[in-house]
Structures are given as structure tokens and as C-alpha cells.
Image (cartoon, rainbow, N blue to C red; front, side, top):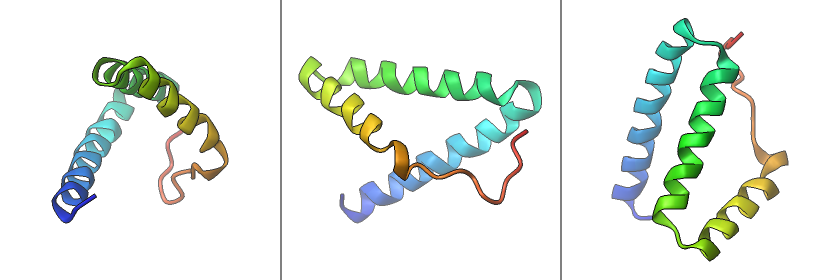
Length: 76
């Protein structure tokens, strides 16, 4: 990724994260997480062909041990 893409990615993450925290006041965290995952997978399914979608979902599965918890936030 180039610097603009890195900046855009960070900005999108920050904006979505802020909105997610706001939603946490209203909804259970499991509902929010399930909704975000579903939306993300639907976006990938829309913008990728079948082969790339399968690669993406396999990549997500392989990343299981690399995913970190939010350390400084209490979400429950």
C-alpha cells in the first residue's frame, strides 16, 4: 500500500471504530461484532470474484491466532 492508501485505511478504521463505540452504548457487543463481520463479508462478496472471496475468507481463518483483543478498552 502507498501512503495515501495507508492514510485512507487508518481514517476509515478510526471513523468506523468511533461509530462502533457509540453503538456499544445502545447494543450488546456480540450483536455489533456479528453485524460488522456480516457487513464486511457481504462487501467482500460483492467486490471480489468467487476465487478471491474464497482466498479472503481462508486468509481470515488463518489469521485466527494473530487477532488481538482491545487491550485498553472495556467492551462489556
